Length: 113
Image: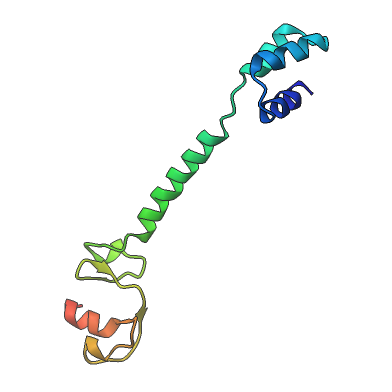
């Protein structure tokens, strides 16, 4: 009850001294009032930590640079970038591949696999 009163009073623009006077006149214990007035909300800290964690995860998963094939979820690293869509398209040269796809057979041939 005190917590709700304090929150509503703060929203209305009352300062802590005014709130305390009001609660004391209603018969509430001074120590209890002080404890409730001094409680801090840490929801913003939790939010910042979550944003940082999601940012790190996004950077890790969205980074498509690679050095070797095992660095890529697709299993194919070409010129320092992970192949996004590796299809089993039958082609003779990379230029014959469908748009948005890297042809596995052409990649294999060009990589000496």
